[in-house]
Every structure is written in structure tokens, then in C-alpha cells.
Length: 262
Image (cartoon, rainbow, N blue to C red):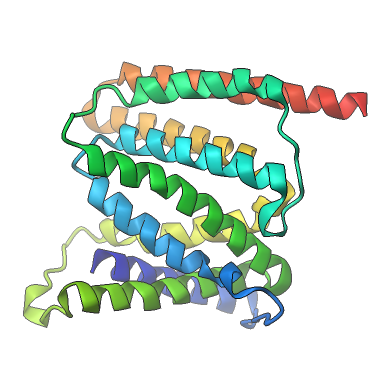
């Protein structure tokens, strides 16, 4: 039900954006059907995040998802999958990836032994996130960022609604209790904004670096929010973020040097 509500608020947000930009919904029939599965994969991501939340720490969910995103992004860049530009992987970049792995290790300590399923699903969200955002970007090139985002949430709503029906059926209205904390329902709106921004940028930079830049932004925000809420600074998250950032900077340096040589 939470996943359905997230997609409803996402649809409303994108619809408002279409009105403000005076943009009509466009749909291209020239792409392979798999390209339109980004919204369905987004449902898997949301469901898996909801499943893992509370079972393992938020930082562990983030780190495991990053590891899955990194591996998926490397494959997409190497082979130019989903109509993306080929960006061969330099072996020296393993140094940067090693730093990223160290950062992930810091962020996933400690993890309970009985949290095997949350660990697996958190890792799988890395794959679904990268493939979803890449396919959405391909649609955005043909139909525009706003239309691509609307299609993402429409597909996601249909799939999540079907999952809700088959998993447990529609709840009675009396069973649905809305919280007075309105801000908790903004997940769909913020997600829609993230999808739109992603559609505008994914095709312009490497999929691998898109993953790492997003990680730096997510981790920095998480550290600030954790400090504001708990008044404590988690050394594991901070050290993990530092190692990942060093790995990112090292690989960016390699790319810049390669460009200058050409």
C-alpha cells in the first residue's frame, strides 16, 4: 500500500510539472518493450527498500545498494547496453573501486547474522536502480524528461497496484489510517523530482560516475540528517563516505588524464 501511495503522489507531481511547463504527454513506439520496464523495476526497488528497512541499518542498505549499482554500471559502460555510449573500463580503476569497497565495508559494520534476505534484496536494488534510470533516460531522449517520468510512474502504479491485489487484496477504508505527519507522504513527490533530474543527466555522463555522484549526495545528506536528529556523528558512515569519495576522485583523475592524452 505504501508503494502504491508513493506512485500516486509521484504521478500528481509529474502532472503538475507538465502543466507548469505546458508540455504534452508524448509516447514513442519505436523502442523495444523492455525499455518501458523502468517503472516496474522502480516498484521492485521500493518494495525491497521497504522490506530491508528496520532489518538492517539505513547506511547498510545504502552501501549494499551502491555496490550493486557499481557493478551494474560497469557492465553497462563496458558494453554500451540500453543504447548508452560505450566507455571501456580501465584496469587501473580497480584501485578506485577498491577504495569504494573499503568504504562500503565501513558502512555495513555491524550487520546481524540473521539479516541475509535484507542484505540480498538491498544488493539487488542496485541493479534495479541503474537499469531503471538508464531505460528512463533512453525514453527521455525520444519523448522528453517529463513524459518519461510520467510513463515511469504510470507503469509503476499499475504494477504496484497489481502486486497489492495479488499479495493481500485491497484493504478496507477503515483499515487505512493516515498519519497527521504530512511530510511522510512526500516520498513520491521527491522521487518524481529525482526521476526528472536523472532523465536530464544520465545520458550525459558515465553510468558508473552517475552512481558515485548520487552516492556522495545521498551519504552527505544522510550524515547531516542523522546528526540533526541524533546529535551524534556515526564514524562508520563518515569513514565510508570518505573512502568512496577518494575512490571517485581517483577514477575521475584517470578519465581526465585519458581525455587530455587523446
